[in-house]
Image (tube, rainbow, N blue to C red; front, side, top):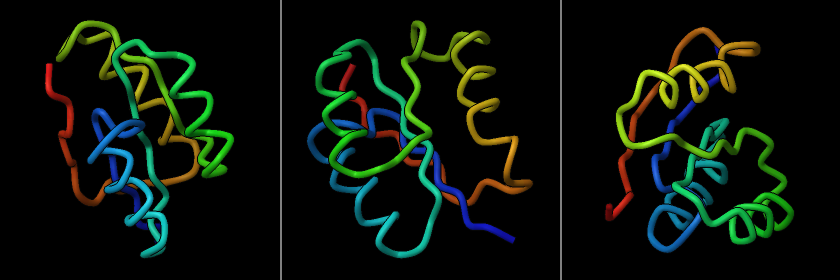
Length: 87
């Protein structure tokens, strides 16, 4: 079974570092971000990670559903959940 990690705030700062470290450790990383589309696009291009989603307001059902859909097509179990957002 594939190892999957969800990193909230995973495209900038410490969240990006955690996303990259988890990818290097063999995880499929699903990272979300709050609103800086340029930084997220750059992160996606640099890392090759394809499961990058923009979140709705924190903890909204829409945001959680969108993030879940980004990982559910290829995996059945999510490993760690790592919140790295400062908002």
